[in-house]
Image (tube, rainbow, N blue to C red):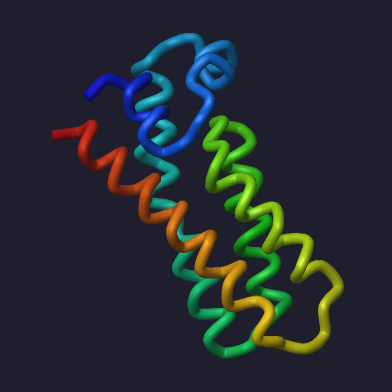
Length: 118
């Protein structure tokens, strides 16, 4: 699988990312770093313990990484959850489907990057 095919698999914008980083080697380097980032685990743990401030920080970090690397699908779902958590003081069940969307997009992203490495 090429880097471009990987972007297609996880719902990213290869052309936009390539225009910024200018090489597949750099894209691959930063995609690998993104899969190793601990923000998703922190988001999961923070939501489990209803620590909304920490959950917001984690998903906001994920959103930023996605915007910089044009990881569109995960970036969009992260954006929605970020806004739902912004200035929020109480946990609510409405966060569960938003988190599930982020989780699915994150898993698709990680799986695609791992397949590309094979």
